Image 1 (cartoon, helix red, strand yellow):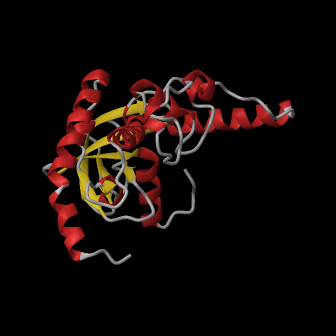
Image 2 (tube, rainbow, N blue to C red; image 1 turned 120 degrees about the vertical axis):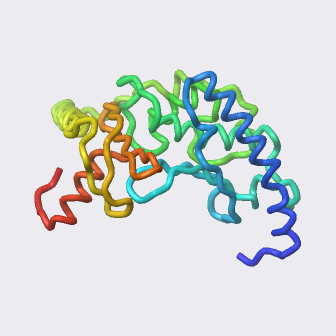
Length: 237
């Protein structure tokens, strides 16, 4: 999409205002939840197909929040209302919460980026538990109990039980710690690093690895797979 240069300049000039608004909101949520979302880098772009996104810092991806100025900007033809902007920021913060806090088992029944774990996070901060933007959602009082209640529609009990056991096995396997503090590890992008802290989460393990002056959070399963590929192994984790 070609954007008028004058509009682009106006939108870029707004970024300090948006940044301050987002940081203020995230600092408030951080105090409420004991997290550090306000410290995560925030970037802006001119995306036409997405309003915002949260990228966890796994693998070669840098952790960041990203928002499109074509939607949150004040000088676009149809800007979001303040309530819808705030709801968008909360929507992405809820994704951040998924990766940075323990989710009770009873809220892990629905998979997906916008599954029950994400909806649970939405319920804690008052975000609309809907995957796609709809004008006015930020003003609605949502029935979180309804969206978080597990719906059982499958009548095939044996199949469901088998699936549940398989899921439980995978979660247990993926949450087994396979490293120790001070272990050296190799990363395909950052090179050799040292593990400073290990987080055992529900269904995964997050390693805090020091690469020189940088501290990166890396998913244990991803790191193991990356090293196996590099070694030319065929065994799966």
